[in-house]
Image (cartoon, rainbow, N blue to C red):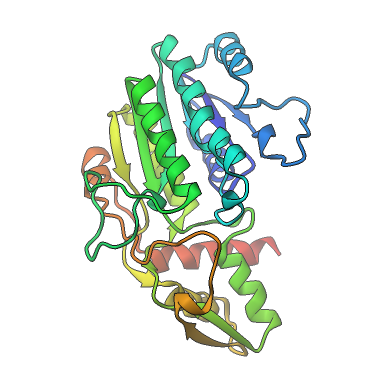
Length: 297
């Protein structure tokens, strides 16, 4: 198969590139997303997924059989002031990709988010729970889900949450940096979810590709449940940071332009049963990520 992976410079895209060596039975085309450049600059040799004609040409010329769309506008707070661009990347672009691959009879995996829910549940969200996004980011990602499902018969939506990796900017790397710089740090304790190591998600995506796409909506994160505050405490403990006092904050003490889900734990039963996955516990994966970060220093 010839597979297009968009957003290759992001956390998940980078992790997928690392795993490609273990999946050499396919040919992968990794592309960054030029439209993510807010200044409108178009880097050379990049595929602009907001350009429908460019997508069609690329998919036809490279004879693409499947698409993994890791690209998105993920700046949750900035999205409130950049709604048009956010919608273009998170909703319109996936529609273009889905239509292009459908014409070739191919498949598509669209990466989505827990932000399609409002976070008022008190039990893990299953795929059939009603969606109710309360932010621009969540609404545009939901629109992207719907566009892909409507335009590509062999499409798979994977919702994930609290993504981190050794690549890019993320919560884990930020908490390590701040823990080394500051003597005290306040972190939200009343938002509950499950961290997701991007490498584990990449493994799940390759399992779906290699076993065969079963269309539908799926949830994926690591196992377990934790707050941002407890997550930070674990990050510092594993990273050997003991000079920073971490204190719990209410969400109301740290207002943001975009609303965050208070509860975003995802039930992963469907994807585990469909692809026979053994998903690691969040702390096991966190320790692996921090070990990799320290090795890269």
